[in-house]
Image (tube, rainbow, N blue to C red):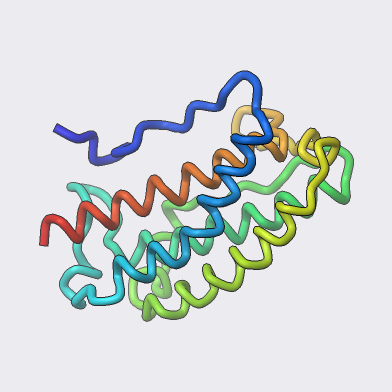
Length: 173
């Protein structure tokens, strides 16, 4: 049986991040908005209110979460490029997912924002040099230093992770 919480597994960063990893991960980030939009285009309101697992978020919450999370991600890249290994601000994604806009707003609002955000983010990512990819920020949860190269992989995984959640809803309804 598929692990519904982590259907593609947890992110496993390679010890050496190659140019090919970066290329594949940026492609994943670039293609995510279209993949999500095509998948959920014909979702009924019932499907939007369906969770991919017991205790999990609804499709609507997942879609809004992707925007919220990736918006934070984009800003983290900007901080890392303009400050010396900044300590970023984390956010409580579970509480954000319970806010009324995440639970009730039309998904088109976040789908449009994901499309625009990813277009600008990918433009930015494709312009980073190897030296830029080595820049980093500190995540306050565990005081972990994360390079921009690794963070590209994390966000590529994150998008695919939640895309799989949406596929589970599509397949089960």
